[in-house]
Length: 307
Image (cartoon, rainbow, N blue to C red):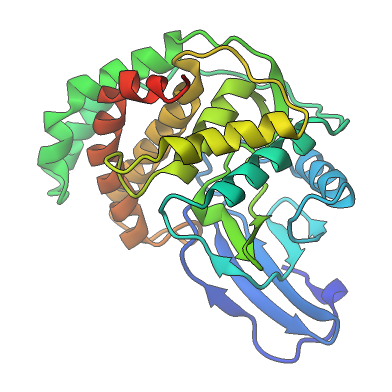
């Protein structure tokens, strides 16, 4: 990667571990500190629209959205100015933090930014029986659990394909999760915009509010925190869409695809040169195999959060 536009390095570029899809490095130069993201272009789950995302990020940054300054983007490398802040744990945030996230989303959705790509919805993969057979044949540590949930995963795939989305569709971040957030002086900083695109509003709000209102599983969900995100959205000028299962279908569908992608990486049996480490793929696969059936079974309980 050519990083000469960032200045003269004052030390070696260092790996920052933990990315679920790409690989991150920190580079310190005579012009400051930068977050350099090496995009996984080998087996991405979806196409990354570099120019559109960068234009969207620049508009959001210019509008005062709290985020790292976008510096440059190419087909395989993203550069942002480094931002110091506290990592957010996977635990319910404060009501004030949740409300501010809601306000930030309302501001993002109000931006007038051209987006040239129309999302294409491919049918959800239904190869779960085959994946379970391959997992058993290759001795994966989570093979038995996957086999026991095959019918549930097929039911989840049907739900993702048939759930009605009421609209409106908005241009948005699409991945507001604890691992993509920092706290700076107690207030949010929104990271990792590369999945940005068009999305049904209910899916964005449901995914965001639920992720900020719960712990690692679904036994600890704080309804007041869930509501704080929605109240913040309204306070920021947004209008809430109708209640229904569409609020959670994007989160379920995204997690389903992420789990399948990591299963395939594990089945390959070798450490890929890009993307997450093999150990992290095993962890993500196991978490999805255990967590998705739980979330799917709790849909009525989750819909009750909408009031």
